[in-house]
Image (spheres, rainbow, N blue to C red):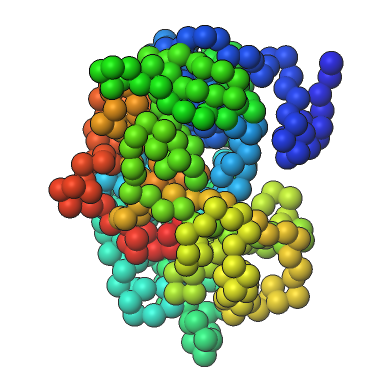
Length: 416
């Protein structure tokens, strides 16, 4: 049977995925070495690296819906590593390094475009904060440079840098190695590559429980398709981690919020990079189809809704129109929301849990997509070695007990 790209994408969106023969949807076996909960970019990537790097191919990725149907299919495609703290710069820059060669690695075009991310400064505080970022990034070997208003205008010609604007451009921080990628292609690429290495990908298979033995170690997962035994379990289920962890008797310091975004009607190329503004909390880029991809903030209340409050989107659009009056007549095609898990310090949890054989990757908040290959690589390393890599070692649960937080709540400029 033949499958066109259009029919595959349409089926993926509808939730009735018909897979081509090279990576079929499989029925679960009774026992696996590793079960990964969540078939998004992080979960599928972890399965791929387990098979590719460590030869662990008896792996199942179980997904309650269809692969890439969660936050991986609901993001605004931004990839960058210009975070302030050493720990954050380390893991996000590792991810950018992997993004750079990912299409070649997977033999699948993830459409990574290093067009740059420009963070605009509109006031003295922005200037001081972003210049601090630039210096901190350079100390960590992360590319970032300060631009004057004139240099910002040269890089983004549609910018109005006149000082009588409501939000005058006083400069900007540019990471040219950053950029965008196709929002869900990373899941498809990892899925195909992992399946070729022997990984089973099991869709429409919700996890309903985690079975533990007398010694407290994991024995496997209860699912809608029956019990699946596993020596190790990795949980990478954005928006649902707390629910899954409770099945193992663990409570996690996570809150879930809707995060909204929207796209416009397509127009000819006009936005050359990703442009962010922390002062008004809005950011914009342009897809290869010509749509303006606009990101908003998280709602101010916890929720599992994928719609979110209307005033968040209204504020974002007003902010975009203030900075770019040229877009005032643009029409929006659609809006959506993803569910993000947020920790008290706005940094992820990636490592072992108190339950033997249970590992977790969660709490990325608005940074999940850009971290995809790096987080997947570190989760695979931790599962394979039963110990964290030095890159993800700081992102453990113990930091909330000892108070050694990695507070990226404001330090990451726009928290996306």
